[in-house]
Image (cartoon, rainbow, N blue to C red; front, side, top):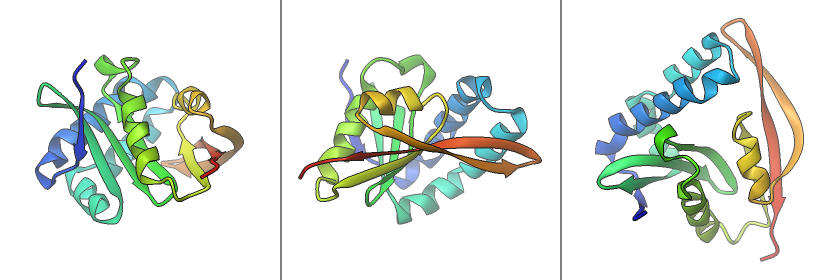
Length: 153
């Protein structure tokens, strides 16, 4: 599969927002209450994607000119990593993660606040589960998993 990894462009915001929404509605809905999914969707509007791209490093994975994955990180923390449901388990997440690793070698410790379904992938990458972080939105309680990995650089 010929996947191209490149920096997010401003004109990618709508497609990227739609990709994130698709993942949340198809994949995350199995793990989180609908009110939490609504909060996640509201958080990832095209306008917010553009704002986030000014604060974070954002990369997309393209296949045949279609955005099929998104990675956002700042310093040693992955902010988000989503792969379109039709393209999951095809190595795209690994390629985006490799991009992250190549750009963050100077950090000895790397962290993520993983979603429930993302935990397994990060364990494969070598992250260790540290603890659950509980939050509340829209009168619903949910958690992310704080994970970290230490690299010898």
